[in-house]
Amino acid sequence: MSKHTVTLPQDFILGAASSAWQTEGWSGKKDGQDSYMDLWYKNDRHVWHDGYGPAGATDLFNRYEEDVALMKQAGLTHYRTSINWSRFFTDYENGVIDEEYATYYDRFIDAIRAAGVEPMICLEHYELPAYLFETYGGWSSKKVVELFVLYAEKVFARYHHKVTRWFTFNEPIVVQTRVYLDALRWPYEQNTHTWMQWNHHKNLATAKVVQLFRAKGYQGSVGAILNPEVTYPRSSAAHDVQAAERYDLFYNRVFLDPMVKGEYPAELIRLLDHHGVKWEYTADELAIIRENTVDELGINLYYPHRVKAPSRAWNPETPFHPAWYYEPFELPGRRMNKSRGWEIYPRIIYDMAMRIKDEYRNIPWFIAESGMGIENEGQFRNSDGVIEDDYRIAFIGEHLFEALRAREAGANCLGYMLWAFTDNVSPMNAFKNRYGLVEIDLQHQRARRLKKSATWYRGVSESRSLTL
Ligand code: BGP
Image (cartoon, rainbow, N blue to C red; front, side, top):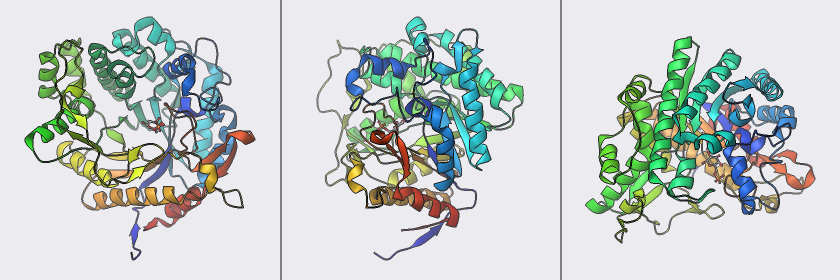
């Protein structure tokens, strides 16, 4: 195939993402400062990988200066991470800041900015305080919505002059789906009512934080990082198309619509009622959601979702699950990332871009995560000790190309962020699959080493051109 080169617009974001709990480690963490993820890892030892997990993570808390220097070497224009809600306070109910943790954060943000990289901050990347989970049932409670707004208020007051792009949640649907729909995570309880209540309270919390930010008159924007899955039906037959539409309704539009259009899809409400799913909401809450839609979106896009009509009837005596309406479908001959079990299909980026353009008022958005988790990357190390991750370079190139193509076609796509900047802790498998531009060598005191992809990324960032 002949090579061709495409140009990146000067203002196009070329960044990388991570989160607090997946990188910082537990040094300096005080009793009572566990997050929901810490709680889960403490209750399920099997998710640790060879004894490694969030306790040590990448030890960012102690090594952020080193990592910021590497951000420059990898050519990042932007870096996205979260602040850890569970560690930001010593008293969540009264908003008493943990000065030791906040000082670490002050310095980390200052260092990122001093390196000429723009920080983008998410208020929650699964770091719901375990105390609020245990005391109030987490996002089941309206009290937690209030406490999240208090947290946002304190964070904005401290950092609004240093950070201008804020996001409420990363993938707000994930925790309650794993816990209350699929009962895959501790405490393994299937409860569709609770699932929908969490969804609603996260939508409400986002709207309230947007309202607060605007009322204070801060410069900048508030958005959310969502993970709508580009969903393709097996065929154009009506029953397969309906399966894809229902999937889209329950997992994608349940956040996209309220956050961008200000309301839940009527069809979603109808189906929830039909299945007796009870969730509490008031007219006032719906009005807050309507009047405070987000400024921009980050979208995490990893793989396509393919579905077909369900092949069996579900037992109506069991709690309703959206999977009553669809079944997964594996495309014959699909390209796979075998380590993670995810299909590779770069076209998802273009298709999502066109959907946002046509159905979601062409709101500004960027790819907030895209990436490739690979097992045993050490096998690709060359004689200089560098991991030659050509598969990652090809993956980024193909996905970035789709983003640039969409932008040419009128999409308001602001940029591309790789997951992840460094290798880090994955929710389901700790350090098994490696995602980073930068290797974390666990066997050698977590030494940092740029992978081949990092040098390549810097080349793309500096030359503003991509050759495929
Ligand atoms: C996203 C999350 C990240 C990250 C990534 C990779 O859903 O926002 O936190 O972990 O997925 O997935 P995994 O770690 O499960 O391989």
